[in-house]
Image (cartoon, rainbow, N blue to C red; front, side, top):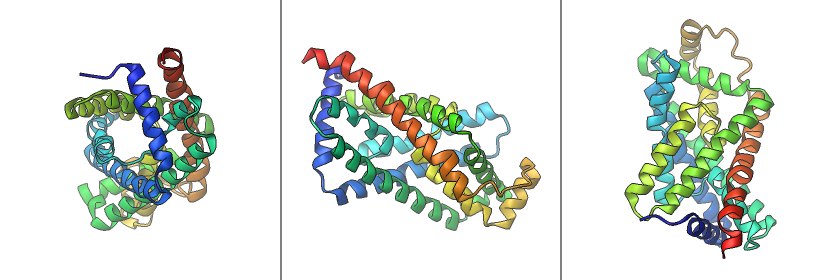
Length: 274
């Protein structure tokens, strides 16, 4: 059994109201938990893909592993910034204010970042990046460098494409009344987002932070030069991470989740059917 689109939108609106009534410390904590779960999915997807030269197969394998992060977020009741972009439906229904939306999103975003950084540091210190004689560390540098050198247009558009799929996965999972349905929705809708190589601001916290940490390891840097021909890693810096990735990708994720999914779902399936 699944909910109808109208019932799903209504349920999400009610959930949005509950989010704005939670103490902000709880919202922050749930954001941290979510950031950790997404980062773990990202880290393990890198392990699956790092030694495969064929880009399509590598991304497909990463896409098979990564959805576990969203599955954990859904079943643990954590708060994910990209999925919470759907709260615009509650604004349109006049159930929450724009200020409540901004405050909640800000605390979730900060929490997601903190969670992602925590896992990045733990992964780096665990020695996991030594896999394949340091190739995983080199791959981590390569991924971070590619992400930190995107153009604004690439960051925004890739962010839009990503969150269309993420928010679709969240709504489809919510529409399912049983755990198996939620798991399948999380897997099959997130799979194309990762396979397509689209940009997710929360997952990128892991990819970029882990890349910056790997940059500090001379063995990983040497492996990156030898395996991928990366001779200049100076572009992998905090300024480029923020300006070339986090800001445009976050904007793209907001646009994709709110304008491309949330608002159409509200007006097509709910507003005129109350």
